[in-house]
Length: 100
Figure 1 (tube, rainbow, N blue to C red):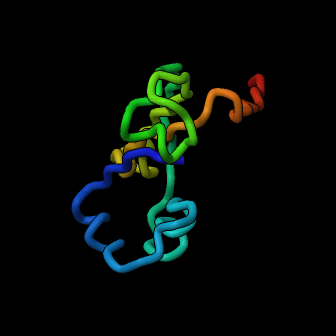
Figure 2 (cartoon, rainbow, N blue to C red; figure 1 turned 60 degrees about the vertical axis):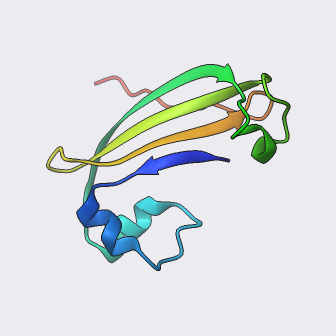
């Protein structure tokens, strides 16, 4: 799942040399004590470009689903911005909505 990820400099510097192959959020919470708050998430359909298509096993121009996520800590500071790209034929979107 190719994508791009941006972090504030003070957080990113603490991650140098660490294994970042898994989910970064448990690392931020458990190792660095950064309490996670909310995330703004957007989904859009787009076309695979030359950068993404080899990772997804697609030809350039085939459809992909792109997820844009901006995560904030508990104080509201943005701490992680990322794009995640998925094959259009291999994505399942599931969520729960609670009524208050």
